[in-house]
Length: 472
Ligand code: G6P
Image 1 (cartoon, rainbow, N blue to C red):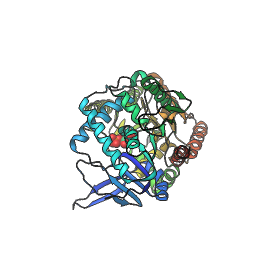
Image 2 (tube, helix red, strand yellow; image 1 turned 90 degrees about the horizontal axis):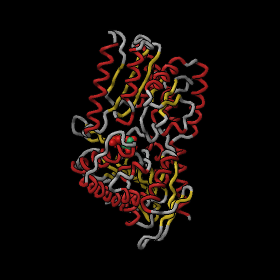
Image 3 (spheres, helix red, strand yellow; image 1 turned 30 degrees about the vertical axis):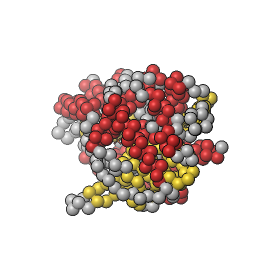
Image 4 (tube, rainbow, N blue to C red; image 1 turned 120 degrees about the horizontal axis):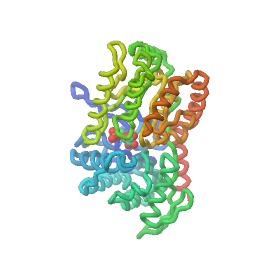
């Protein structure tokens, strides 16, 4: 049993801890690498916090437990829940729809029904652990119905929601057969946060079109529904960030710097290392990046001895068909480019289908002369911010897609339209050839931005907005 006493409750699909089972069957929990935990840890400790989420494997019925001063409240998912709620509705309906239908979304009624049922399970778990008048912060597109369900169960709570991915324009959003239920679900929150101003605008328009409610600037008028009084809901942008100080400190460690030098050496000491780091996802524009690089090699604008591309593509959602197909296409392309241009001593592309610890990522960022972020659509893209945070040497060039949320802030990057392959090739060349003085000038400006708007700042802004609502 858990007592309903927590003052601050975070609800997210995944828990902030990973379950590790060793060879002897011993279970241990380690903090997952995401920035969200780091940002919320101080608030959690101060305010007697609990975190509600899924432990990442099927059919785990686990009692709540304490990890590093945070109460962890696991929500079980069966194999069928995972198939329909997580892989299905979350990642094969909402994910492609919200990323501007780069891949075709599938609409299945059984997936939707399971999404509703699982959202209810999360809402009930959050309602059970929340103390009177507690603040509950729900995270991301997997749980968009939770705010309303929670408000119905517990009208005393202050409820926030943050959408980590884009919110599409109405022309696209309106495809969703359950567009009304999702908008109503989100409006159960007091504050609905988005990555970009444009996302908040798209949501407000969806509210006007679907429900006919009035909006003024960042405020939405929700009329009285049944027992519930009329309310104002805030919908606005809070661009998320990373724990930049800790990333910078990590990248400054001597062993990380040594590892960066080793990586360059092992790649055959090329003059320029290009780097891509992504989950293997069709939103990331990995194919466009490979195409551009392949053409630069074919046209002899770069030589394999001088320029090497490292592509880290961490495995993701591997049972969803669109991801399987993407993997095949990318691996075929990498194989072709390497077959055509690599030599025994100089790979054209070093393709790594793995996830890596933070230390290795930091070393890769330090080794990379040019970081390629060519997403076709991305809520924010924290890799771009990590690269900047790692570069205390004020060197390195960030090539950044204008379709990533980060482009709203990181104006000193070389911004690109990844669909424009010629433009992308020219930008990669400009990055390779950029003089040191310009690299330093741009990187300094980028670093200032990332340092000032770190993830702690993000959560403070959001929670301050939410606290304001609670008082009024
Ligand atoms: C995106 C989403 C997160 C999600 C992550 C990894 O960043 O916004 O909510 O956790 O991808 O995806 P996964 O499906 O493995 O949780």
